[in-house]
Image (tube, rainbow over all chains, first blue to last red; front, side, top):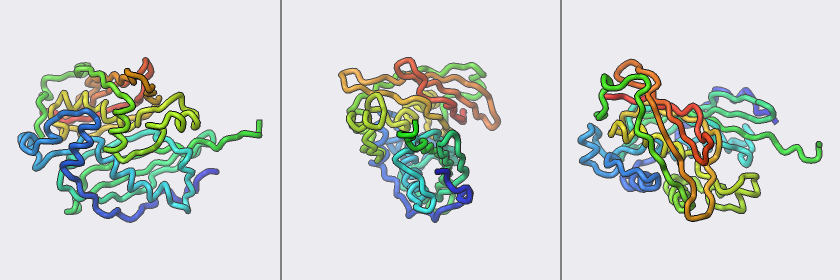
Length: 153
Length: 142
């Protein structure tokens, strides 16, 4: 069933702050096998002009996707999450995420499309720090595949 | 931000050093823990096959994380990345054997933009299939 177009433009309340920890960044960098010292060594990060260790570019997805759960699980929207696949992902950075950040995410439904029975949902997550400064925007495109048509053939 | 590559030293067509990233089931379990994405299609073969996949597949976000390393290793400073986007076109299938899969990533400068930034277009393949489409990063050089 096609999603309700009237949800386009709807924003959800900002999330509770997520505090970015040095060890969480280290764990993520190790999981992707990335030995860049800017992720683990505060002195190396400072030498590059950052106040503390920074996070790999895609680290913030864990935070924005969790926030997007407000949209995905909105019973009024009625998305069938069991059929959802990740279509596209994009980030635009004002500055890198870094240890000590307390980040909030405001999710907005940017677009809803229906193509060949698939529902396509574009969610924008605006990430701000504790001072209210914009840090990064994440755009996530989710595709809910058409329901099975067994029995119709 | 202090990229080690100078804007004036690159031109459209400049190739970034290509890299190969191995991925095994153990890699996926570690990534699941670090990212908080515990979808069983990334570690449970039975479940993956039940939902129509050929086998366990890598997290798309894992592939996205590996692909940008070609850019961040080139610039030195990961904070130089201004924009990064991908389309997930094909899954990276990770068999339960000693080899797993390999993600091959190459990149080249596709455009020189304002403010010392360049657009890098990335190509990511696994088992001969293109696994990312429209994979582009904008990065600020020195």
